[in-house]
Amino acid sequence: MPQLAHSAQTLLEKLDGFRVEIDPNRERADIVLQRPPYNIISMAQRDQLRLVFESLDENPDVRVVVLRAEGEHFSSGGDIKGFLEASPEHVSKLAWNIAAPARCSKPVVAANRGYCFGVGFEISLACDFRIATETSLYALPEQKLGQIPGSGGSARLQKMVGITRTKDIVMRSRRIPGKQACEWGVATECVPDAELEAATDRLVDELRAFSPIAQRTAKKLLNDTEDSTLAVAIELEGHCYSRLRSSDDFREGVEAFHAKRSPSFTGR
Image (tube, rainbow, N blue to C red):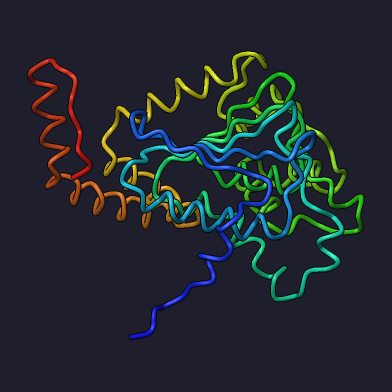
């Protein structure tokens, strides 16, 4: 019987511009951009990042995924020359690839310092949490190239900060400091640059303490109801709540609460 082959096997043989670190003891996976000094994200790298997120989503040793970078800048954006060389079919997949953190059922944390521009900003916006530092600068500078954001940047940003602020950022290619991004609700937290790793560790450990099934349910519910009416959102929330009531984790949580002890969740 012939063996089945998948293009992903070839794509992941050599990671382009990043590495993956998995720590089973901490139930954590780190995707680390490593093309300093600016960690430019290539076209091929976008395909690989999607596949890696999908693989980590299936990995039972991983509870939380962290997207971070080496050096003083998270990412200055994409490989500009690569856009002109890519086929229309490839370009049409850009937003799908960069949305991989949002589709991942597990919590995804982006640790941003320095430049977080273009696709670097867009993939961070697709994460669940963004920790900024006082050196962070967020921007969608595509107008300077005669283009617009093409991987979900303007769409996600408008949901977060509204049309007025989004126009200010997109149409003027404005750079938003980390502190302002936090005040606007773009970043979850803003910390001194030297504390980024410690703040990321704290958030990962906090997320790991919750029930995996409750975390997955909450993330999917919030993503699915972002564009729904209030009535639909409440209805779906009720269905999700009802299903979780029969989970082992909910029973464990209730019993631990009454016993005044820390719960031991299993994700079932």
